Image 1 (cartoon, rainbow, N blue to C red):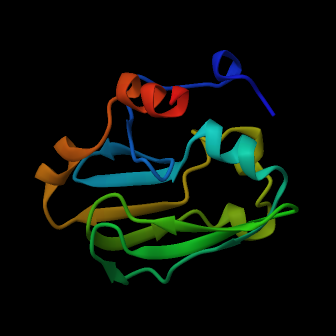
Image 2: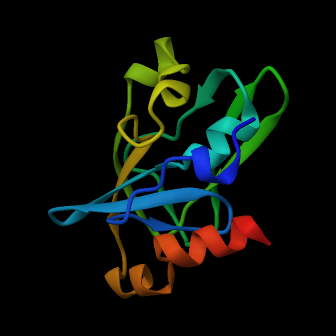
Length: 131
C-alpha cells in the first residue's frame, strides 16, 4: 500500500468520507472512488453497477466493488438519477486500479446541486486520511 504522500489527489474534485469523488460535467456529476480507496482495496476484479434511470438519495448504496481482498459498498455522495454507467468497467474492472480518476463509475443528474457544498475539499479529505 502507498504512503499518503504517494497517493494522487485532484484539487478540482470533491470527496466523501467513504472515499468517493465527484466532479461536475455540465448539468451532471461523475462519481468514482479515490486513489486511496483503490489502493486499499487492491486488485479490483468486479464492479456491480446500477441500472441507468435508477434514483438514489444521498448516502444510499448504489453498487459494489469486489477486490481480491474484500467487497466494498459504493455510496452516492449526492442524491440523483443515474444517467450513465461506465460500461468499460464490466469487462475491465482493473481500470479503476490503473487510474481511479479517469475511470469514473457512474454519472448522475443531481436532485439538489447544493449538496455538493457539503462534500470535502481535497485538503479536508487529506486531513481525514491523516487522522
